[in-house]
Length: 506
Ligand code: NAD
Image 1 (cartoon, rainbow, N blue to C red):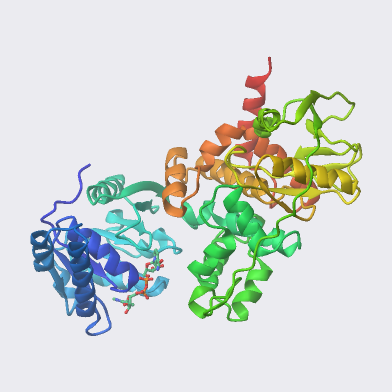
Image 2 (image 1 turned 180 degrees about the horizontal axis):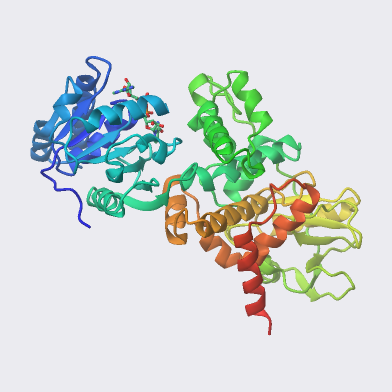
């Protein structure tokens, strides 16, 4: 299916943040663009703001003056909806309220022709519900741009229950022709990004609520060990705590309060206190002039042991074996009755990649858990969670060992799945579940999470690298400790893990 013709007028209704950005994208792509807003004069102000942004692009050498002049000549502000007749595509970016959006589209249907593509930029409402009252609902799609629309490449193309496949592919082709990276998605709460990303925020909030680490430490571990561009606390301060919490609550309510999406009491209290993030001068962090960002907790220097012994295969942490040798530490083989694979420390403790259990009071020994890293070689920080019964000399040895490998070390409370591992396992599970339910393809989910929220790896790619049984096992162990359904591995992940195990048996 082909994109709508460049000569075909595109209309944008609602000329706030998103409307302006989307209009700019369509305009630069070559369409005549008309803007409409209910507040008198606002469409004209938006047209002026878009023109000013195009001027800046010319100053920066990213747009020629000729193209700018041609684009501004194609841009117009409408004073009534009736002026949008003749549009090939209308994109709505008005306030996020179902009845208002429904009314707008009903009115539009009486103005535009039946082959005009109608699209909503809603981020949390059901596309099916918005288009539910339409006379020709087949041409109605979700086109979910990300803010700022001119800069961010991702567009989620959402098919409602009544959307014709031809309308969805036309919308997809149009977004592509505009230089965007469209992904296809079914009409389910949060679409792709806002659904799959929920545990990135929720797990960090849980670790904080369990008092295992403070926000600065959790952010630092997810950045410097997990490879995420920003930690969840600093990111939600940027997004706005109220906005982020509203998305979480809306997705949770839309899934009939499924425990996998339960919001956080700590974030609720933060919002109630008016600490909304950067925009209010304070969120998890303070932003007033001169305010200092708290430092993550980092251990002082400790001595590394000269010799350690490794039992079994360290799985995703196996690169540590070679790294220890390269760092001048003698690595011996270890054999014991303990069922796990681990690094044996000098005073009897086992240093082990977190597996979703608690370290304290481990039935077969003293355990210190360490967190999952995106890449053990390049990561600059590692988190350790010692059991309460660990010999302090072994904790110092574990700290010294990672310091010898060039890592900063954060010691956190003994919570199952620690910080990065539980987050990644949940992302993997959410992605597996979404694919099996027909929300989107694995490839589109990975694309959406890399482009929409800058994840260092798509959840499917991560799952392939770690093996689906890794995430399944971690979650099953966590569900045993925190029963209630949040950590129960999805049916899809369990099937994948079973298959993976069967295929890897000799
Ligand atoms: P905004 O408040 O900046 O702008 C909304 C505009 O719509 C305002 O100018 C308002 O006057 C106008 N408006 C309200 N009712 C109208 C009506 N009936 N007809 C015409 N104009 C009307 O909002 P925004 O942040 O641009 O969000 C718009 C939509 O895009 C929402 O559905 C939102 O969920 C979605 N969205 C927002 C973001 C974001 O980061 N801001 C990202 C993706 C999607």
